[in-house]
Image 1: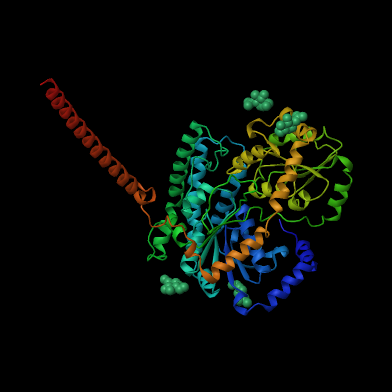
Image 2: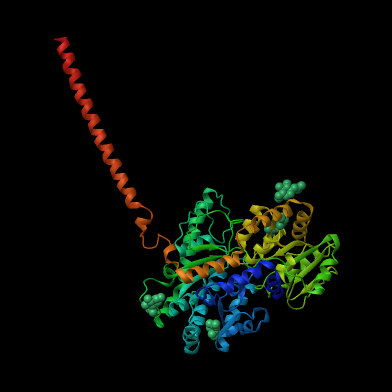
Amino acid sequence: MTNPSFLLRRCNAVPFMRFCVVLLTLPPSLLAGNVLITTSLGEGSHYFVGKTIGKYLVRHGHNVTVLVSEAYAHRADNPEDSELNFIVFHQSTEQIKSVKERHLAFSKNALEPSTATYIINLMQTHRQGAADDCEDLLGNPDVMHQLEDGKFDVVVYDMIWLCSLMVAMKLNTTAVLSSPMAVPTMLSMYARNPVNLAYTPDCMNGYTNKMSFLQRVNNVVANQVLFQILEYMHGPFNTVRERHQIRQDLQGSISDLIGTYTDLFLVNMDFAVEYPLPLIPNIITIGGITARPAAPLPDDLETLMQSSGDGGVILFTLGTYVTHIRQEFLEPFAEVFGRYPQQKVLWQFVGEPKFKIPPNVKMMPWLPQNDILGHPKTRLFIFHGGNNGFYETMYHGVPAILIPLTGDAIDQGSRLTHQGFGIVLDKTNVTVDVLDDAIKTIFNNNSYSEVAKLLSARLQSRSMHPGDRAAFWVNHVMKHGGGYMRSPLIGLNFIQRNMLDVLAFFLALVSVILVVSFYSIRCTLSFCKQKCISSSKQKHD
Ligand SMILES: *[C@@H]1O[C@H](CO)[C@@H](O)[C@H](O)[C@H]1NC(C)=O
Ligand SMILES: *[C@@H]1O[C@H](CO)[C@@H](O)[C@H](O)[C@H]1NC(C)=O
Ligand SMILES: *[C@@H]1O[C@H](CO)[C@@H](O)[C@H](O)[C@H]1NC(C)=O
Ligand SMILES: *[C@@H]1O[C@H](CO)[C@@H](O)[C@H](O)[C@H]1NC(C)=O
């Protein structure tokens, strides 16, 4: 994900020198906050976003430690991340196997249709497994002592693995939530941000912000279902919390505590592409935090890029999750890529392909995605719809073909087609014809790359890089706390929140006025009538 040459480049640049000087002259209190990042066990987009926040915090002068499971202990040895400290917590061989299997379950099952049985099975496995991991962490006295000795000022935790929130609670530090996904409805639920489902599509339903009546009905139902599912998934964490007596003085379940304990919410979305909605001040958008100017490519890749001539390069990756995709799914890609000999194709692929590879295709187990997307020769990005890849392709103005495989990818797909910088394909129907059509359409119609360029300019027109923004705000709540920014909805009950009491009061008032008016008019009328009758009687007399 990150490349050391990027940091070197920044250090040589004049603005960074100025930044260094500013840092050196800052009062010591601004320096060296101790930050703990615990956004996942050490894999997936949750890990990469957390780690990236950490790297920016280091550049802003903080001491950053990342907590990972023994299942991903190799993270600690990555020379690209040498500026970060790592703490690895022990897990049994059995549990490490379970961690990896749970992770691979996403890739192995990515092509299965999302039926109820499939989803329920996936949920069951993850629910208990995540709590067992938590037990391994909180029940390990050595690691807990090490964490306590770390004297952390702030813990950056993950919105899904809530064990990480309990670490912050146990250490009694400021807590910052990191959301690698752009899920405004889910985040709003936790942060008690007022959310209006009339124009905010719920996550994973793929709607835009213009919904028909039935879509809005569905949106409300989906939102409730999601809430119940999350409550169910968080259940075992409450048991773990009780067993370890973690801050029993704090009221509420673990999901309630996300809203009441957290000082800051960092969410990987940007209004350059996100549907507008109001956000309370402690929700900070850091959309595209992993996207940055391209660093120079390794020599072999650079030579390959240049050899593509005017045709340019297609980048194809199914991301870090997808290492176990069925080969049959990939065959049409190889066949179609062969039909574009004027283009070179870079394909991220792990293992041995069992199909024929056309001469213009180069397969590699790992590719520096951001740096290739930022290369002037790159023409098209074909990917699985991960949020980081989505922002990286937009940042570099490259049109995309998106094949939503799991989770929130369908939402990225909805934004992609809504904005018009790419095409979404159905994962159950990626045939040679469908794929060929999509590539042809993007190459023959300039509108996709023009929109991509516009969005790129829009995304980059901002006061600071999202990484610096994240570091700024983490530093801010470390010093000043974030309680003053918490949602005013916390502490209001259903009636107060929806102003039902006020509505009832006004209804009563209007009813009283109507009744009084009705009777006074009736009275006046009947009085007039009597008057009229008596006066006409007098006339007759
Ligand atoms: C930075 O954090 C690590 C790990 O918690 C700790 O060992 C080290 O002493 C800290 N360094 C400073 C300067 O506080
Ligand atoms: C947590 O820290 C605050 C000060 O930051 C302190 O007032 C409070 O007593 C601590 N709570 C516990 C349970 O340690
Ligand atoms: C697959 O896509 C093609 C082209 O869009 C379409 O004609 C066909 O009906 C689709 N098949 C299925 C099973 O959805
Ligand atoms: C190009 O694509 C845009 C957006 O999808 C569409 O509105 C336009 O009609 C297309 N132009 C041609 C010539 O097909």
